[in-house]
Image 1: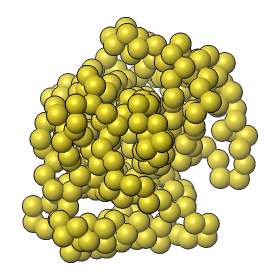
Image 2: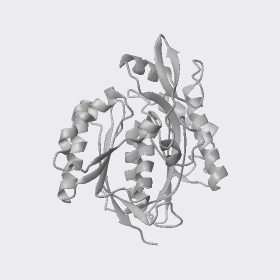
Image 3: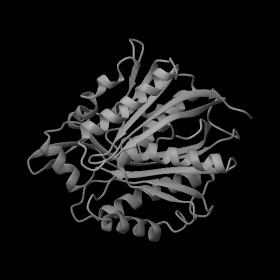
Length: 331
């Protein structure tokens, strides 16, 4: 368990299928999500994709296109060039394979060819754990910042639900949620510079991951939620907000809803659910980082009373939880 430390958001950017040119969360949440529809083998799929589906398209190419859009937005709007600055990047990717690394290696090689410079720093890391990777990357960033207090770390994520695999799963579960895609970037540090935080910083009080081989999804979810509730109760503080991965995908939400009772004692009538994916659609691996961004921006606006819990899950193996508190930052 890492020592408690204040984390500060310095910069952020995103490009999401629901509104690719949006610069802030408010633009998304003030506009109703207007999904389009496509026919997939006789089933209607609802989506908010930047580019239409093409059967012959390489999935790696699509992810690289999303990353290029994000890198270009940062350079144009914030004068930040992730391809030239030797930035420390923690890259969060979809959970591509459970039996081997060939798919993951192929994607990383494609990214390195297509975006030379993005992963040049020796301190760059890859978290191919779906949306759970966001909390894993954040914990790793906290550890690095404890050793290098002046460092700034970019958390980047990219994923797309525009694939035959995602479409087949949608059909299998008779789903009705909105499939989307996007790339998200957060630059965090441990010191207040020119930040977007409004005088507040975030303390990562606790984090846990469960990916034990042989455990069912329910066991893994119960494990991390039970631990987080225990840590909240140790501080005799109720949970004020729960950031949970839900966009209307009932099969995915059922995993944590069935284990929600493990938070008993740490929640009360004033605890609220925060589910920002309802405004942008399901983002896959990028969903976890988008929820973290939403959480940090809510902190800046003074909307995080008490403790905040974020829970994330990949489709197959990974479950992660984090417990946060707001603190004042030192200039």
